[in-house]
Length: 112
Length: 432
Image (cartoon, rainbow over the protein chains, first blue to last red):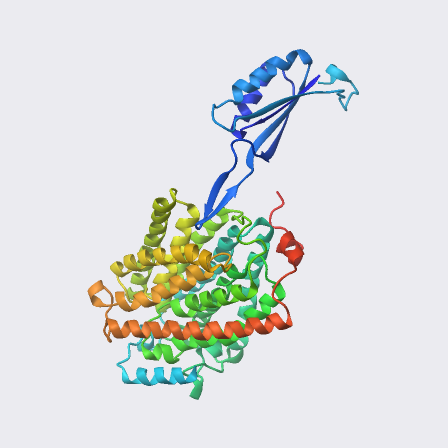
């Protein structure tokens, strides 16, 4: 099993969710997060006082999948979250040791 | 100070006096239902300016951890000033001070003599004192913006009680209660000097003695909600029709024109501020247009009973330009932390309005005309403004220094960084 973590632009969340659903992904976790990368932040101006906002709002998606789905899922996220502008975000893939469904006690792929 | 005032008085007695309209018909003590209805409405509108208007305007501008504290300050000032006014404040401001009447009134303790049948001009005195009370409430409340996010609530309350007693009530008497500035011919229809210059200069003194918020100006302190601020500014605009058109104390042509010029100046100032930001900084901002509108409201206040539409356009335009630089470049270059720009908008806007009243009241600009000529009237306007700046500035400084030495002005740095809402009130504004 793999954990795919994607940090994307907030307005792309619905598109990514739809694409992943079509691939058969049965669940994911989305979190509102802040951070910075090459996009840096932006400037806000209040009565002439400039504030540089270093942390940009993003949405982080965590989805755990079987190993053979990884390429399809990563491709799907890459395609649906891309705008071509700086700040589209990143995808990280990590190994997952175990997954357990709390209600039934099922483990591994059964629990996904 | 007293010598100066005596000099001013002598000059005043030599001059042909320009009397504000209400003094001219103050002898006519027959109740008029139309006037009374309008003044009941105006009193509601002016209270509406402070709560909720001003408190929302300020609540949106502070950080989320202090939103309760500024609303609480506005509300508590409203309650406390009402009690002080009832016990002795109305008498200080509008009573007959006898030999001291040029400077301060007396009597009318516990609103004695104000009954169901007492008439002042053409309205019940109960309504007159209620209308004036709402002015006494908003003037100290304006200062909340200068010391926001760092002042002790207890010291703030004591300061406001003292300031209301020794600064507001006498200055209101000078201009409206039969004191020397009104007699001299200084034009201050709805309180540009009494309310806005007075609060603006006191706010400046207070925020300088109090010191900057921790982290200012290096730490970003952006407003927590421009939604609250723009809603609050809009309420101020609406409520201000009671403030200005109500100051005629009658439902007549002067009141109608006061409403019209108030609206024109406000719209002009909001538009001007927006354009200055758009041209100077690339984007028109909601906070800018709202701040500009408030600057216009402030500046038209002393002029609203005597200028015409052309004067309103001029005052709106000039106030936006002056306040834009006061709240921006001036504040940053001098380095004081007038957190929400009380001095930059009310002090400077009030001064600009007070002076320009002397110009635009002239008939050549469509005003109601001057008895003294423009030069003399400009001088009188300056006298009124300077007398208020000196008196309010000095006494505010004395009060603040005394409280600094006795009660202490600031919350602890730990309380400040955690926010006043939890530290002083055990509450938070938002539990989202």
